[in-house]
Image (cartoon, rainbow, N blue to C red; front, side, top):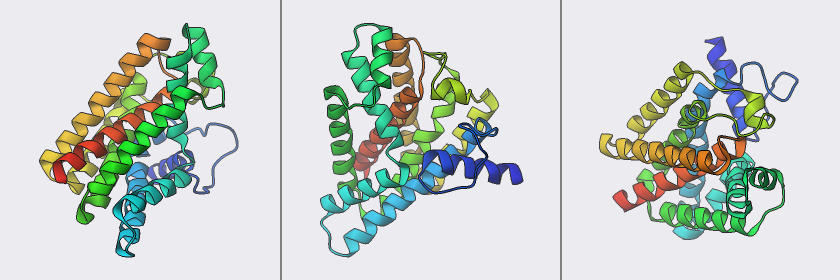
Length: 250
């Protein structure tokens, strides 16, 4: 039980800006094992965003504005960790002429045209989807989307080699197949507890296809994974799930 609690703390420290006690060093010793708690923390993040959205709606804030403010609150909570990865991937894949150039652009902290456009598209898609989801489904849908999107990352990680020898992904290490399976099972369980079986399975399929598509693209573009690739995959999956659920529930 203590290991699970330690993993939860590590996952919270990595995926959010919530202050948590952690050992010295860039990567805690239990970081790889903590991947199994990514979907749990994702569900917590999604639920928090959903509560903000619902609270604003009940105060009379228009649905679109409530969704925008809730998503903004979510970005503050997470430090826009995965949004930054998505933007870097778009800039690198879109602007680099070869693998070395793509990786160099992805390391640049400045936001380029491709990155700005992909963030705009992603935010607009999530915004419009969230605004159309009925009140009683807001929290379940967001918890599901964030849990499944993060739950798919360990499996995606073990399917790809590292695109560079240094960087966050290489330094952090890869979870094993058992840990990736645990993360997937927990994410699916959260989805099944939150939504109907049909909607949960559709959402899980959207997450799997998004991760597979990003893995295929990353392999073709840079030969493997980086931390930005995993972050971008989370955003693609999260957006796809929310759009799918909005279409089914609206």
